[in-house]
Image 1 (cartoon, rainbow, N blue to C red):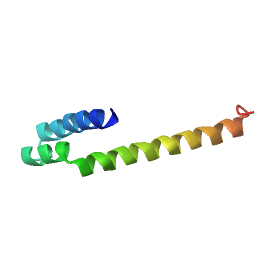
Image 2 (cartoon, one colour; image 1 turned 30 degrees about the horizontal axis):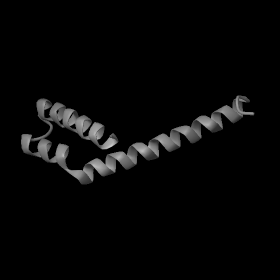
Image 3 (cartoon, rainbow, N blue to C red; image 1 turned 90 degrees about the vertical axis):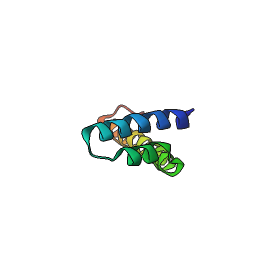
Image 4 (tube, helix red, strand yellow; image 1 turned 30 degrees about the vertical axis):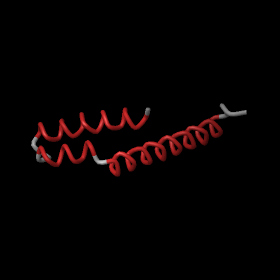
Length: 67
């Protein structure tokens, strides 16, 4: 399910960049449909989620929220 959502977000993002003139239309289609780019974004989101949860835990320990 996350692959579907990632692909949709990539298409909207590529469409926005094409509309602003930062990407050529062909490059936008390649970016939105490339499974390697999709995999890299999924891994990046997973790493960011893990880092965010660890930072939140460290903050909770410092402020005395975690028992």
